[in-house]
Length: 232
Image 1 (tube, rainbow, N blue to C red):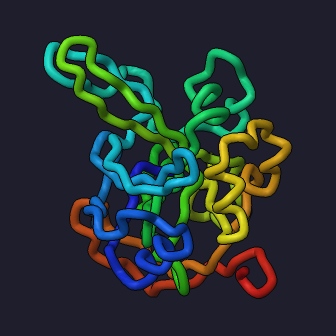
Image 2 (tube, one colour):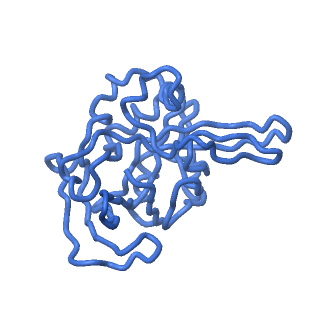
Image 3 (cartoon, helix red, strand yellow):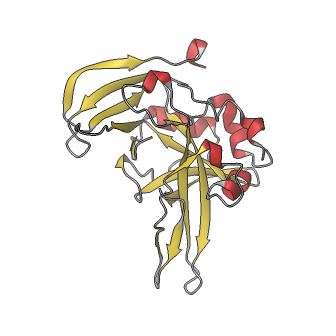
């Protein structure tokens, strides 16, 4: 999955917050075009209470004299096959601090040797995207400041995305999976099997663009259909 998320505070996102019974639904949703190391909004659960928090889209951070900076280790995405691997960046967060990252779309980049990169934007149809995420909380040793960081789990490639991105596909949640994902008493990957399989869980409108910074359309848009009957 490429490092671009689109978030618009629209009716679909507000419905997602209502479905999750978020206690502070009016909190700022960091929005529009988001890239790695930017701030995103995450939904977390603590003792049954669900809230929106700002988090850096880069799971591993290093402490500075003042504040934190992204680690040199790339960590805006976490591979599904690393979740059960002790010592990996996602091993402990998968067991103790899972989150949902709301979005209305995301971008993918296809690159190949000798050819220019090809960019596509995917916009969710009918409901917001609920990315399956991990997060960490960091407290500064001198100032006491507490910040949060996060990553999106990526699954194996999906055949429907073959012309868009061939390396991975993002893990997204169905409404029926919100509860088990945020409930960190569920600690075994096999208990969340469907989330960690490549799947298209909702319909997407897809548009090729010239580049992410300009977002000018190239050619006609098309649709990628959900794998799920009834798109439930």
